[in-house]
Image (cartoon, rainbow, N blue to C red; front, side, top):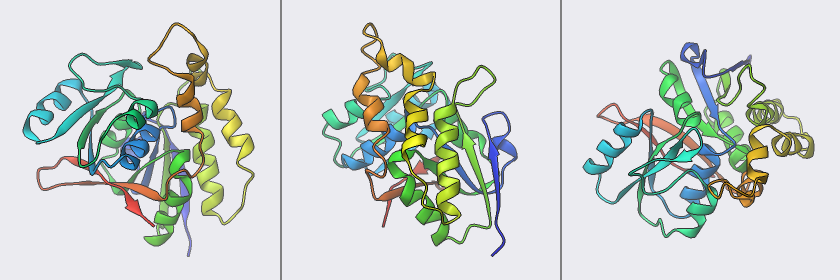
Length: 231
């Protein structure tokens, strides 16, 4: 089967069709995976804080989670942290997630026929899902990547997923090291920002911690809904 693979960022992901894999390692889609691991049933990714708060009012048992430029949002129930997810009883809850990179990539990928949220903690399952659906065109979207030198952690994940898709067995260590050495990771080493606990860096580099992929589809109301697809 002939397959084409492409790379994109937030700037051009709106042009991507076929299977689109939106990556945010630090931390949106690591956080989402830990939320599912804690028993969350579904996550609604949105673009704007006001949208998240409005949707929370319409969905019973829902929590608004996320950040603006990395910082917690006023009126939200939780931030954007795997540690916070692990500390909470989320069984049966619905999350509405707004972040500055990851959820923006999902919202902007309007032409995707298949849409997935991904990070290292669900890497193997993400590729297994792509193989399950026999994807013929794949675009990896590195949501943090920009011209200011940020986002290599997402590109590292994209390149790792690409090699897995090709049937290779790459050593994950260099890819995970790129996350730890990335500009985005440096904020987790500071002592004055409790919103960025150092342990989140470790949680976000726990390769294949979960055995599910995170496909995203539109419901009858046109809203994006992410769920865990277990293997």
